[in-house]
Image (cartoon, rainbow, N blue to C red; front, side, top):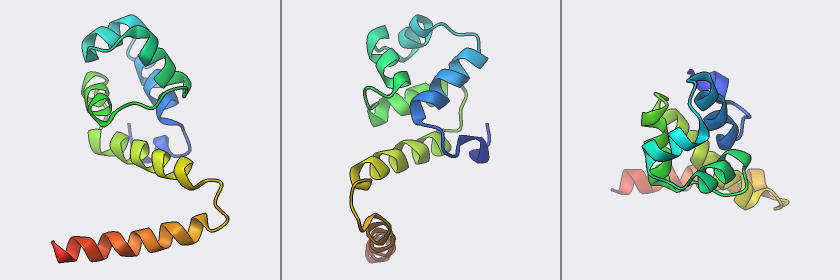
Length: 106
């Protein structure tokens, strides 16, 4: 799955679509990634956030590019954190600058 096809889909939708495309039942994927079926169902419906480790396991199990899925996961978390801020776009720009600065400092 290419990066472009991920755009604007929620992580849960991406997971559900790929799971169904692969012909896996919810309980089958849940068993593969060692999580309760109810939890995976909530993740797919967007009622619960997956943990970083779960995203990695899901990417592997569904043969998704881990980096692309992680980008979607992290960007979704950030977006929901700042969505109600009037200065959300400014926050993102400053955060980008801070990341660049901190990486150079390492």
